[in-house]
Amino acid sequence: MTAIAVPLTIAPSVPHTHTVVFLHGRGDNARNFAAALALSRDSRGRSLFDGFPSLRWVFPQAPTRRCASVPETWPQWFDVWDVRDFAAREDLQADGLREAVPALRRVLADEAALLGGRWDRVVLAGISMGGATAAHVLLNLDVPPEAGARLGALVGFSCRCPFAGRDLAGMRAVLGLEDVPGHDRVVRNTPVLLEHCADDPLVLVQNGRGLRDTLRGFGAKVEWREYPGGGHWFNSPQGMDDAVDFLNTHLGLDGSGGVEATLRRAPSDAMDLS
Image (cartoon, rainbow, N blue to C red; front, side, top):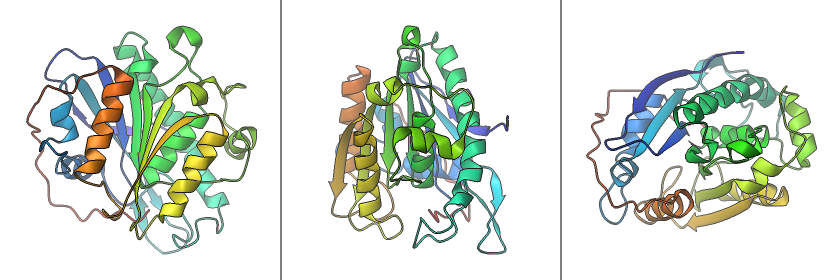
């Protein structure tokens, strides 16, 4: 199994209750993404880090992969032939997902172990390509009933669904992974929040709606939030308010604590190319 590097974790400032594993977008890196995330604030002026002091934040790093369509290499969870037509040569996307999904399942398992085996206290989140990857992790994840039969939540921002248009078995068959469940309990039991800005120029909002409809078709309980502005990023402050409310509701937290994020944005040429 290919291992995924985790170059950045942010420890809780009070006793640890939950963990968020957050996947960055294409062309970005874990440290730059976490620093940028800290700048998106809710209506009380808090970042997500500030609002949840009992959460551990884990930021895996996508591997650097050669791009098939241009003579370059980028950090990306999987390759995309044409960002204007995600269905073009879609088979290229499966190669990276076949490597990333099992490795990320292992990251989730390690984080659940730190919480006494409580998978229902682990949140998987992602933006753009990170969110698309997270969706396929959920579809190919088995959590036994005694461990909660679900994740704490799946949260996606500005993301889409590779290989949409198939049923659940067909989606799983595309990757053909081992240790994939023959049931849909984890998909049905994991609460999902999807946020998308209508003016997103990279992953058009209709692609986000497609992911919403695909997951709902598989029985997932999806909360959809669409905003008029924000581009290919987080909507702030309303989108951050909605994310805070969702996590408070589904993780049983009150979000009243506050810690000052200690990240400093490092110089970077990171870019999100979806």
